[in-house]
Length: 575
Image (cartoon, rainbow, N blue to C red):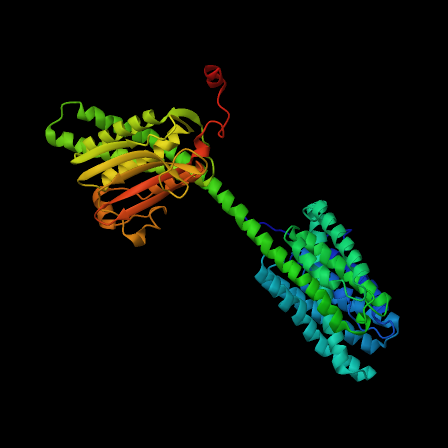
Protein backbone atom coordinates (compact mmCIF):
# COMPACT_ATOMS: atom_id res chain seq x y z
CA UNK A 1 0.00 0.00 0.00
CA UNK A 2 1.49 3.30 -1.03
CA UNK A 3 1.57 6.15 1.40
CA UNK A 4 1.38 9.76 0.33
CA UNK A 5 3.43 11.99 2.60
CA UNK A 6 3.32 15.72 2.08
CA UNK A 7 5.43 18.25 3.90
CA UNK A 8 3.55 21.31 5.06
CA UNK A 9 5.45 24.58 5.51
CA UNK A 10 5.83 25.71 9.11
CA UNK A 11 3.57 28.61 9.99
CA UNK A 12 4.45 31.34 12.39
CA UNK A 13 8.17 30.54 12.16
CA UNK A 14 10.74 33.10 11.13
CA UNK A 15 13.44 30.65 10.08
CA UNK A 16 13.91 27.48 8.05
CA UNK A 17 15.94 24.38 8.76
CA UNK A 18 18.13 23.38 5.82
CA UNK A 19 20.82 20.72 5.92
CA UNK A 20 20.71 20.56 9.72
CA UNK A 21 21.38 24.30 10.18
CA UNK A 22 18.96 26.53 12.07
CA UNK A 23 19.32 29.64 9.98
CA UNK A 24 17.35 31.91 12.31
CA UNK A 25 19.50 31.42 15.44
CA UNK A 26 22.63 31.38 13.27
CA UNK A 27 21.71 34.74 11.71
CA UNK A 28 20.95 36.18 15.15
CA UNK A 29 24.32 35.03 16.53
CA UNK A 30 26.09 36.58 13.51
CA UNK A 31 24.39 39.92 14.16
CA UNK A 32 25.17 39.75 17.88
CA UNK A 33 28.84 38.93 17.30
CA UNK A 34 29.10 41.63 14.62
CA UNK A 35 27.82 44.27 17.06
CA UNK A 36 30.20 43.02 19.75
CA UNK A 37 33.11 43.08 17.28
CA UNK A 38 32.30 46.66 16.30
CA UNK A 39 32.27 47.80 19.94
CA UNK A 40 35.52 45.97 20.72
CA UNK A 41 37.16 47.39 17.59
CA UNK A 42 36.18 50.91 18.63
CA UNK A 43 37.69 50.34 22.09
CA UNK A 44 40.89 48.92 20.61
CA UNK A 45 41.28 51.79 18.14
CA UNK A 46 40.62 54.38 20.85
CA UNK A 47 43.46 52.90 22.90
CA UNK A 48 45.97 52.27 20.15
CA UNK A 49 45.45 55.51 18.21
CA UNK A 50 46.74 57.66 21.00
CA UNK A 51 49.59 59.93 19.81
CA UNK A 52 52.76 57.94 19.31
CA UNK A 53 51.16 54.60 20.15
CA UNK A 54 50.99 51.64 17.77
CA UNK A 55 48.37 48.88 17.84
CA UNK A 56 49.41 46.34 20.42
CA UNK A 57 45.88 45.41 21.50
CA UNK A 58 43.23 44.16 19.05
CA UNK A 59 40.29 42.59 20.88
CA UNK A 60 37.68 41.70 18.19
CA UNK A 61 39.64 38.83 16.65
CA UNK A 62 40.72 37.38 20.00
CA UNK A 63 37.19 37.45 21.44
CA UNK A 64 35.73 35.86 18.28
CA UNK A 65 38.34 33.08 18.28
CA UNK A 66 37.56 32.29 21.91
CA UNK A 67 33.82 32.42 21.12
CA UNK A 68 34.24 29.89 18.31
CA UNK A 69 36.59 27.76 20.43
CA UNK A 70 34.09 27.41 23.27
CA UNK A 71 31.23 26.10 21.11
CA UNK A 72 32.01 23.00 19.06
CA UNK A 73 28.82 23.35 17.02
CA UNK A 74 29.71 26.82 15.76
CA UNK A 75 30.99 27.15 12.21
CA UNK A 76 34.10 29.15 11.36
CA UNK A 77 32.66 31.08 8.40
CA UNK A 78 29.80 32.84 10.28
CA UNK A 79 32.21 33.90 12.99
CA UNK A 80 34.63 35.30 10.44
CA UNK A 81 31.83 37.14 8.64
CA UNK A 82 30.68 38.67 11.94
CA UNK A 83 34.17 39.97 12.69
CA UNK A 84 34.59 41.31 9.14
CA UNK A 85 31.27 43.19 9.28
CA UNK A 86 31.83 44.51 12.81
CA UNK A 87 35.37 45.69 12.05
CA UNK A 88 34.30 47.38 8.82
CA UNK A 89 31.51 49.25 10.64
CA UNK A 90 33.94 50.35 13.36
CA UNK A 91 36.39 51.66 10.75
CA UNK A 92 33.57 53.66 9.11
CA UNK A 93 32.51 55.13 12.45
CA UNK A 94 36.10 56.06 13.21
CA UNK A 95 36.41 57.98 9.93
CA UNK A 96 38.03 55.64 7.43
CA UNK A 97 36.75 55.46 3.87
CA UNK A 98 34.26 52.79 2.81
CA UNK A 99 36.82 50.97 0.64
CA UNK A 100 39.51 50.92 3.31
CA UNK A 101 36.99 49.87 5.95
CA UNK A 102 35.75 46.96 3.83
CA UNK A 103 39.27 45.84 2.95
CA UNK A 104 40.51 45.91 6.56
CA UNK A 105 37.31 44.22 7.74
CA UNK A 106 37.86 41.46 5.17
CA UNK A 107 41.47 41.06 6.33
CA UNK A 108 40.32 40.62 9.93
CA UNK A 109 37.72 38.10 8.78
CA UNK A 110 40.39 36.11 6.92
CA UNK A 111 42.55 36.01 10.04
CA UNK A 112 39.70 34.77 12.23
CA UNK A 113 38.66 32.19 9.63
CA UNK A 114 42.19 30.80 9.44
CA UNK A 115 42.58 30.68 13.24
CA UNK A 116 39.20 28.96 13.72
CA UNK A 117 39.99 26.39 11.04
CA UNK A 118 43.30 25.59 12.72
CA UNK A 119 41.57 25.21 16.09
CA UNK A 120 39.13 22.74 14.56
CA UNK A 121 41.82 20.75 12.71
CA UNK A 122 44.83 20.88 15.04
CA UNK A 123 43.29 21.15 18.51
CA UNK A 124 39.94 19.45 17.75
CA UNK A 125 38.32 22.14 19.91
CA UNK A 126 40.17 20.84 22.98
CA UNK A 127 42.08 23.13 25.29
CA UNK A 128 45.55 24.24 24.27
CA UNK A 129 46.71 23.62 27.86
CA UNK A 130 46.33 19.85 27.67
CA UNK A 131 50.06 19.32 27.24
CA UNK A 132 53.15 21.34 26.30
CA UNK A 133 53.19 20.23 22.65
CA UNK A 134 49.61 21.41 22.12
CA UNK A 135 50.40 24.73 23.78
CA UNK A 136 53.34 25.22 21.41
CA UNK A 137 51.04 24.43 18.49
CA UNK A 138 48.65 27.05 19.84
CA UNK A 139 51.44 29.63 20.02
CA UNK A 140 52.82 29.00 16.55
CA UNK A 141 49.88 27.90 14.44
CA UNK A 142 46.93 29.72 16.01
CA UNK A 143 48.45 32.86 17.54
CA UNK A 144 51.23 33.62 15.08
CA UNK A 145 50.39 32.11 11.66
CA UNK A 146 46.99 33.83 11.12
CA UNK A 147 48.38 37.13 12.42
CA UNK A 148 51.34 37.00 10.00
CA UNK A 149 49.11 36.05 7.06
CA UNK A 150 46.64 38.85 7.72
CA UNK A 151 49.44 41.30 8.56
CA UNK A 152 50.87 40.95 5.06
CA UNK A 153 47.54 42.03 3.54
CA UNK A 154 46.78 44.73 6.09
CA UNK A 155 50.21 46.35 5.79
CA UNK A 156 49.80 46.52 2.02
CA UNK A 157 46.34 48.13 2.30
CA UNK A 158 47.40 50.73 4.89
CA UNK A 159 50.64 51.52 3.05
CA UNK A 160 48.82 52.00 -0.28
CA UNK A 161 46.03 54.26 1.03
CA UNK A 162 47.81 56.17 3.82
CA UNK A 163 51.47 56.06 2.80
CA UNK A 164 52.59 54.54 6.11
CA UNK A 165 55.74 52.49 6.50
CA UNK A 166 54.93 48.90 5.52
CA UNK A 167 57.31 47.42 8.09
CA UNK A 168 55.83 49.39 11.01
CA UNK A 169 52.26 48.48 10.11
CA UNK A 170 53.11 44.80 9.66
CA UNK A 171 54.93 44.56 13.00
CA UNK A 172 52.18 46.40 14.86
CA UNK A 173 49.46 44.20 13.33
CA UNK A 174 51.22 40.88 13.97
CA UNK A 175 52.29 41.63 17.52
CA UNK A 176 48.98 43.20 18.53
CA UNK A 177 46.90 40.27 17.29
CA UNK A 178 49.39 37.70 18.58
CA UNK A 179 49.34 39.20 22.08
CA UNK A 180 45.56 39.35 22.32
CA UNK A 181 45.01 35.86 20.91
CA UNK A 182 47.62 34.48 23.31
CA UNK A 183 46.01 35.99 26.40
CA UNK A 184 42.33 36.61 25.64
CA UNK A 185 41.17 33.69 23.45
CA UNK A 186 41.86 30.91 26.01
CA UNK A 187 40.30 33.11 28.71
CA UNK A 188 37.09 33.67 26.71
CA UNK A 189 36.90 29.97 25.88
CA UNK A 190 37.35 29.05 29.55
CA UNK A 191 34.66 31.50 30.73
CA UNK A 192 32.07 30.45 28.13
CA UNK A 193 32.61 26.75 28.72
CA UNK A 194 32.40 27.26 32.47
CA UNK A 195 29.12 29.13 32.07
CA UNK A 196 27.80 26.37 29.84
CA UNK A 197 28.79 23.71 32.36
CA UNK A 198 27.41 25.85 35.22
CA UNK A 199 30.64 25.67 37.17
CA UNK A 200 31.50 28.48 39.54
CA UNK A 201 34.17 29.57 39.96
CA UNK A 202 35.53 28.69 36.55
CA UNK A 203 39.06 28.04 37.81
CA UNK A 204 39.61 25.07 40.09
CA UNK A 205 40.83 26.81 43.22
CA UNK A 206 39.96 30.46 43.77
CA UNK A 207 41.79 30.53 47.10
CA UNK A 208 45.14 29.66 45.51
CA UNK A 209 44.61 32.20 42.75
CA UNK A 210 43.86 35.01 45.17
CA UNK A 211 46.84 34.14 47.37
CA UNK A 212 49.21 34.19 44.39
CA UNK A 213 47.72 37.42 43.08
CA UNK A 214 48.15 39.17 46.43
CA UNK A 215 51.74 37.89 46.72
CA UNK A 216 52.54 39.08 43.19
CA UNK A 217 51.16 42.57 43.77
CA UNK A 218 52.89 42.86 47.14
CA UNK A 219 56.25 41.68 45.76
CA UNK A 220 56.06 44.04 42.78
CA UNK A 221 55.12 46.97 45.02
CA UNK A 222 57.99 46.31 47.43
CA UNK A 223 60.46 45.72 44.60
CA UNK A 224 59.46 48.96 42.86
CA UNK A 225 60.04 50.99 46.03
CA UNK A 226 63.35 49.32 46.88
CA UNK A 227 64.83 49.14 43.37
CA UNK A 228 63.86 52.50 41.89
CA UNK A 229 64.30 52.74 38.14
CA UNK A 230 64.38 48.95 37.59
CA UNK A 231 61.47 47.21 35.89
CA UNK A 232 59.52 44.85 38.21
CA UNK A 233 59.31 42.42 35.29
CA UNK A 234 62.59 41.05 36.66
CA UNK A 235 60.76 39.71 39.72
CA UNK A 236 57.28 39.20 38.23
CA UNK A 237 58.45 36.60 35.69
CA UNK A 238 60.11 34.20 38.16
CA UNK A 239 57.18 34.61 40.58
CA UNK A 240 54.72 33.54 37.89
CA UNK A 241 56.86 30.50 37.18
CA UNK A 242 56.78 29.58 40.87
CA UNK A 243 53.03 30.16 41.08
CA UNK A 244 52.54 27.88 38.07
CA UNK A 245 53.84 24.95 40.16
CA UNK A 246 50.93 25.46 42.57
CA UNK A 247 48.12 27.01 40.54
CA UNK A 248 45.79 25.00 38.30
CA UNK A 249 45.96 25.69 34.58
CA UNK A 250 42.65 27.57 34.58
CA UNK A 251 43.96 30.04 37.16
CA UNK A 252 47.05 30.68 35.02
CA UNK A 253 44.77 31.44 32.05
CA UNK A 254 42.90 34.01 34.14
CA UNK A 255 46.15 35.54 35.41
CA UNK A 256 47.52 35.73 31.85
CA UNK A 257 44.50 37.72 30.63
CA UNK A 258 44.64 39.96 33.69
CA UNK A 259 48.33 40.70 33.16
CA UNK A 260 47.72 41.68 29.55
CA UNK A 261 45.24 44.39 30.50
CA UNK A 262 47.25 45.50 33.53
CA UNK A 263 50.49 45.92 31.59
CA UNK A 264 48.67 47.52 28.65
CA UNK A 265 46.94 50.03 30.94
CA UNK A 266 50.23 51.08 32.51
CA UNK A 267 51.99 51.17 29.14
CA UNK A 268 49.44 53.47 27.53
CA UNK A 269 48.59 55.63 30.52
CA UNK A 270 52.17 56.89 30.93
CA UNK A 271 55.07 57.44 28.55
CA UNK A 272 57.23 55.04 30.54
CA UNK A 273 56.50 51.75 32.29
CA UNK A 274 56.95 51.61 36.07
CA UNK A 275 59.27 54.61 36.07
CA UNK A 276 61.82 53.10 33.67
CA UNK A 277 63.27 54.74 30.59
CA UNK A 278 61.73 52.07 28.37
CA UNK A 279 58.51 53.43 26.89
CA UNK A 280 56.38 50.52 25.77
CA UNK A 281 53.72 52.77 24.31
CA UNK A 282 56.18 53.58 21.52
CA UNK A 283 57.51 50.05 21.09
CA UNK A 284 55.01 47.23 20.45
CA UNK A 285 57.89 44.81 19.98
CA UNK A 286 59.13 45.49 23.49
CA UNK A 287 55.60 45.24 24.87
CA UNK A 288 55.01 41.79 23.36
CA UNK A 289 58.50 40.60 24.26
CA UNK A 290 58.10 41.48 27.93
CA UNK A 291 54.54 40.19 28.09
CA UNK A 292 55.55 36.92 26.41
CA UNK A 293 58.48 36.46 28.79
CA UNK A 294 56.03 36.88 31.66
CA UNK A 295 53.22 34.55 30.64
CA UNK A 296 54.52 31.92 28.21
CA UNK A 297 57.00 30.21 30.59
CA UNK A 298 54.42 30.27 33.39
CA UNK A 299 51.79 28.67 31.18
CA UNK A 300 54.22 26.02 29.94
CA UNK A 301 55.18 25.17 33.52
CA UNK A 302 51.50 24.98 34.52
CA UNK A 303 50.74 22.73 31.54
CA UNK A 304 53.63 20.39 32.36
CA UNK A 305 52.68 20.21 36.04
CA UNK A 306 49.03 19.56 35.15
CA UNK A 307 50.08 16.76 32.77
CA UNK A 308 52.23 15.15 35.47
CA UNK A 309 49.43 15.39 38.03
CA UNK A 310 46.94 13.94 35.55
CA UNK A 311 49.26 11.05 34.76
CA UNK A 312 49.77 10.44 38.47
CA UNK A 313 46.02 10.37 39.09
CA UNK A 314 45.52 7.98 36.18
CA UNK A 315 48.30 5.72 37.43
CA UNK A 316 46.80 5.66 40.91
CA UNK A 317 43.38 4.87 39.52
CA UNK A 318 44.78 2.11 37.30
CA UNK A 319 46.69 0.70 40.26
CA UNK A 320 43.51 0.70 42.33
CA UNK A 321 41.51 -0.98 39.57
CA UNK A 322 44.27 -3.54 39.05
CA UNK A 323 44.38 -4.33 42.76
CA UNK A 324 40.62 -4.75 42.88
CA UNK A 325 40.68 -6.97 39.80
CA UNK A 326 43.48 -9.15 41.17
CA UNK A 327 41.78 -9.44 44.56
CA UNK A 328 38.48 -10.43 42.92
CA UNK A 329 40.07 -12.90 40.52
CA UNK A 330 42.21 -14.39 43.27
CA UNK A 331 39.14 -14.99 45.40
CA UNK A 332 37.16 -16.44 42.51
CA UNK A 333 40.02 -18.75 41.44
CA UNK A 334 40.88 -19.89 44.96
CA UNK A 335 37.42 -21.37 45.54
CA UNK A 336 37.48 -23.92 42.67
CA UNK A 337 41.21 -24.46 43.12
CA UNK A 338 40.78 -25.46 46.75
CA UNK A 339 38.07 -27.88 45.65
CA UNK A 340 40.44 -29.36 43.07
CA UNK A 341 43.20 -29.77 45.66
CA UNK A 342 40.72 -31.45 48.00
CA UNK A 343 39.70 -33.89 45.28
CA UNK A 344 43.34 -34.80 44.61
CA UNK A 345 43.87 -35.44 48.32
CA UNK A 346 40.79 -37.67 48.47
CA UNK A 347 42.00 -39.58 45.41
CA UNK A 348 45.36 -40.24 47.05
CA UNK A 349 43.59 -41.63 50.12
CA UNK A 350 41.21 -43.79 48.09
CA UNK A 351 43.54 -46.72 47.47
CA UNK A 352 44.36 -45.97 43.83
CA UNK A 353 46.93 -47.98 41.91
CA UNK A 354 50.47 -46.67 42.18
CA UNK A 355 50.50 -45.03 38.74
CA UNK A 356 47.21 -43.21 39.28
CA UNK A 357 48.26 -42.16 42.79
CA UNK A 358 51.40 -40.67 41.24
CA UNK A 359 49.26 -38.73 38.79
CA UNK A 360 47.11 -37.43 41.63
CA UNK A 361 50.27 -36.38 43.51
CA UNK A 362 51.52 -34.48 40.43
CA UNK A 363 48.15 -32.71 40.12
CA UNK A 364 48.19 -31.74 43.78
CA UNK A 365 51.73 -30.34 43.56
CA UNK A 366 50.80 -28.32 40.44
CA UNK A 367 47.69 -27.00 42.19
CA UNK A 368 49.72 -25.96 45.24
CA UNK A 369 52.16 -24.10 42.97
CA UNK A 370 49.28 -22.31 41.29
CA UNK A 371 47.85 -21.38 44.69
CA UNK A 372 51.25 -20.03 45.75
CA UNK A 373 51.48 -17.97 42.55
CA UNK A 374 48.03 -16.49 43.14
CA UNK A 375 49.02 -15.57 46.68
CA UNK A 376 52.22 -13.88 45.49
CA UNK A 377 50.45 -11.88 42.78
CA UNK A 378 47.79 -10.70 45.23
CA UNK A 379 50.44 -9.76 47.80
CA UNK A 380 52.39 -7.78 45.20
CA UNK A 381 49.29 -5.86 44.15
CA UNK A 382 48.48 -5.04 47.79
CA UNK A 383 52.03 -3.79 48.34
CA UNK A 384 51.82 -1.59 45.23
CA UNK A 385 48.53 -0.13 46.44
CA UNK A 386 50.07 0.44 49.91
CA UNK A 387 47.24 -1.63 51.40
CA UNK A 388 49.50 -3.75 53.64
CA UNK A 389 49.47 -2.70 57.30
CA UNK A 390 51.80 -4.01 59.99
CA UNK A 391 50.46 -5.49 63.23
CA UNK A 392 53.17 -5.49 65.90
CA UNK A 393 53.35 -7.73 68.95
CA UNK A 394 56.07 -8.85 71.36
CA UNK A 395 57.79 -12.09 70.27
CA UNK A 396 60.69 -14.01 71.75
CA UNK A 397 63.66 -14.46 69.44
CA UNK A 398 64.17 -18.14 70.36
CA UNK A 399 60.50 -18.90 69.59
CA UNK A 400 60.85 -17.28 66.17
CA UNK A 401 64.01 -19.26 65.44
CA UNK A 402 62.39 -22.54 66.57
CA UNK A 403 59.52 -21.95 64.18
CA UNK A 404 61.87 -21.31 61.27
CA UNK A 405 63.87 -24.42 62.12
CA UNK A 406 60.74 -26.61 62.09
CA UNK A 407 59.62 -25.13 58.81
CA UNK A 408 63.07 -25.62 57.20
CA UNK A 409 63.24 -29.25 58.35
CA UNK A 410 59.85 -29.93 56.77
CA UNK A 411 60.89 -28.34 53.46
CA UNK A 412 64.20 -30.28 53.40
CA UNK A 413 62.35 -33.53 54.13
CA UNK A 414 59.89 -32.85 51.34
CA UNK A 415 62.66 -31.96 48.86
CA UNK A 416 64.56 -35.23 49.64
CA UNK A 417 67.91 -33.43 49.48
CA UNK A 418 70.94 -34.34 51.63
CA UNK A 419 71.10 -31.01 53.38
CA UNK A 420 72.25 -30.12 56.87
CA UNK A 421 70.54 -27.45 58.95
CA UNK A 422 71.92 -25.17 61.64
CA UNK A 423 70.50 -22.26 63.67
CA UNK A 424 72.73 -19.56 65.19
CA UNK A 425 71.56 -16.92 67.67
CA UNK A 426 73.71 -14.04 68.88
CA UNK A 427 73.99 -13.90 72.67
CA UNK A 428 73.87 -10.09 72.58
CA UNK A 429 70.33 -10.10 71.18
CA UNK A 430 67.45 -8.91 73.36
CA UNK A 431 65.14 -11.71 74.47
CA UNK A 432 62.05 -10.19 72.83
CA UNK A 433 61.36 -8.05 69.77
CA UNK A 434 58.37 -5.85 68.96
CA UNK A 435 57.53 -6.86 65.39
CA UNK A 436 54.89 -8.10 62.97
CA UNK A 437 55.48 -11.85 63.29
CA UNK A 438 53.48 -12.78 60.21
CA UNK A 439 55.36 -10.45 57.84
CA UNK A 440 58.74 -11.35 59.34
CA UNK A 441 57.97 -15.06 58.93
CA UNK A 442 56.87 -14.42 55.35
CA UNK A 443 60.23 -12.87 54.46
CA UNK A 444 62.45 -15.34 56.35
CA UNK A 445 60.52 -18.40 55.16
CA UNK A 446 60.81 -17.20 51.56
CA UNK A 447 64.58 -16.87 51.99
CA UNK A 448 64.73 -20.38 53.50
CA UNK A 449 62.70 -21.89 50.66
CA UNK A 450 64.94 -20.19 48.07
CA UNK A 451 68.08 -21.46 49.83
CA UNK A 452 66.78 -25.05 49.85
CA UNK A 453 65.51 -24.83 46.27
CA UNK A 454 68.87 -23.73 44.85
CA UNK A 455 71.09 -25.95 47.02
CA UNK A 456 71.52 -29.61 46.03
CA UNK A 457 73.88 -30.62 48.82
CA UNK A 458 75.68 -29.01 51.70
CA UNK A 459 74.26 -26.91 54.49
CA UNK A 460 71.57 -24.31 55.25
CA UNK A 461 72.18 -21.92 58.14
CA UNK A 462 69.56 -19.70 59.76
CA UNK A 463 70.79 -16.96 62.07
CA UNK A 464 69.80 -13.87 64.03
CA UNK A 465 72.54 -11.50 65.13
CA UNK A 466 73.16 -7.98 66.35
CA UNK A 467 75.34 -5.77 64.16
CA UNK A 468 76.38 -2.15 63.93
CA UNK A 469 74.78 0.07 61.33
CA UNK A 470 77.67 -0.68 58.95
CA UNK A 471 76.94 -4.42 59.12
CA UNK A 472 79.84 -5.37 61.40
CA UNK A 473 79.29 -7.31 64.63
CA UNK A 474 78.25 -4.98 67.42
CA UNK A 475 76.80 -4.74 70.90
CA UNK A 476 73.71 -3.18 72.37
CA UNK A 477 73.58 0.54 71.76
CA UNK A 478 72.51 3.27 69.39
CA UNK A 479 72.66 2.79 65.61
CA UNK A 480 72.55 -1.03 65.77
CA UNK A 481 70.61 -3.33 63.48
CA UNK A 482 69.19 -6.81 63.94
CA UNK A 483 70.09 -9.20 61.10
CA UNK A 484 67.91 -12.17 60.19
CA UNK A 485 70.09 -14.09 57.78
CA UNK A 486 69.90 -17.30 55.75
CA UNK A 487 73.04 -18.81 54.26
CA UNK A 488 73.42 -21.74 51.85
CA UNK A 489 76.13 -23.59 49.94
CA UNK A 490 74.28 -23.64 46.64
CA UNK A 491 75.01 -22.46 43.11
CA UNK A 492 75.42 -18.79 44.02
CA UNK A 493 74.57 -15.67 42.02
CA UNK A 494 76.85 -14.00 39.44
CA UNK A 495 77.94 -10.47 40.45
CA UNK A 496 76.31 -8.87 37.41
CA UNK A 497 72.92 -10.29 38.43
CA UNK A 498 72.93 -9.19 42.07
CA UNK A 499 71.31 -5.83 41.30
CA UNK A 500 68.42 -7.49 39.43
CA UNK A 501 67.32 -10.30 41.71
CA UNK A 502 64.86 -8.10 43.64
CA UNK A 503 63.02 -7.04 40.49
CA UNK A 504 59.66 -8.59 39.74
CA UNK A 505 59.72 -11.79 37.70
CA UNK A 506 63.52 -11.60 37.60
CA UNK A 507 65.40 -14.90 37.74
CA UNK A 508 69.13 -15.57 37.79
CA UNK A 509 69.33 -18.47 35.35
CA UNK A 510 66.48 -19.68 33.18
CA UNK A 511 67.80 -23.25 32.98
CA UNK A 512 68.07 -23.58 36.78
CA UNK A 513 64.68 -21.95 37.26
CA UNK A 514 63.02 -24.41 34.91
CA UNK A 515 64.52 -27.25 36.95
CA UNK A 516 63.74 -25.97 40.46
CA UNK A 517 60.67 -23.78 39.73
CA UNK A 518 59.81 -20.30 40.95
CA UNK A 519 58.24 -17.18 39.47
CA UNK A 520 60.66 -14.44 40.53
CA UNK A 521 58.11 -12.70 42.78
CA UNK A 522 59.29 -13.97 46.17
CA UNK A 523 62.35 -11.76 46.53
CA UNK A 524 60.51 -8.71 45.17
CA UNK A 525 57.77 -9.16 47.77
CA UNK A 526 60.34 -9.78 50.51
CA UNK A 527 62.21 -6.60 49.59
CA UNK A 528 59.02 -4.52 49.71
CA UNK A 529 58.03 -6.03 53.08
CA UNK A 530 61.51 -5.32 54.43
CA UNK A 531 61.19 -1.64 53.51
CA UNK A 532 57.71 -1.60 55.05
CA UNK A 533 59.22 -2.87 58.33
CA UNK A 534 61.83 -0.11 58.22
CA UNK A 535 64.75 -2.18 56.97
CA UNK A 536 66.16 -3.75 53.85
CA UNK A 537 67.68 -6.90 52.39
CA UNK A 538 71.30 -7.24 51.27
CA UNK A 539 72.89 -10.22 49.58
CA UNK A 540 76.43 -11.63 49.43
CA UNK A 541 77.15 -14.43 46.98
CA UNK A 542 79.99 -16.34 45.36
CA UNK A 543 79.27 -18.51 42.33
CA UNK A 544 79.34 -22.27 43.15
CA UNK A 545 80.10 -21.53 46.82
CA UNK A 546 76.86 -20.16 48.23
CA UNK A 547 74.69 -17.15 49.02
CA UNK A 548 73.75 -15.25 52.16
CA UNK A 549 70.66 -13.06 52.40
CA UNK A 550 70.47 -10.61 55.32
CA UNK A 551 67.29 -8.88 56.42
CA UNK A 552 68.45 -5.82 58.38
CA UNK A 553 66.07 -3.89 60.61
CA UNK A 554 67.20 -1.11 62.98
CA UNK A 555 67.09 -2.22 66.60
CA UNK A 556 65.24 0.98 67.51
CA UNK A 557 62.32 -0.12 65.29
CA UNK A 558 62.11 -3.48 67.11
CA UNK A 559 62.12 -2.21 70.67
CA UNK A 560 58.90 -1.81 72.58
CA UNK A 561 59.71 1.72 73.78
CA UNK A 562 59.96 3.11 70.22
CA UNK A 563 57.31 1.03 68.52
CA UNK A 564 53.56 1.12 68.53
CA UNK A 565 51.88 1.40 71.94
CA UNK A 566 51.41 -2.13 73.37
CA UNK A 567 47.92 -3.49 73.91
CA UNK A 568 46.14 -3.00 77.24
CA UNK A 569 46.45 -6.60 78.40
CA UNK A 570 50.24 -6.46 77.90
CA UNK A 571 50.40 -3.35 80.08
CA UNK A 572 48.49 -5.21 82.81
CA UNK A 573 50.87 -8.18 82.63
CA UNK A 574 53.86 -5.87 82.90
CA UNK A 575 52.32 -4.20 85.93
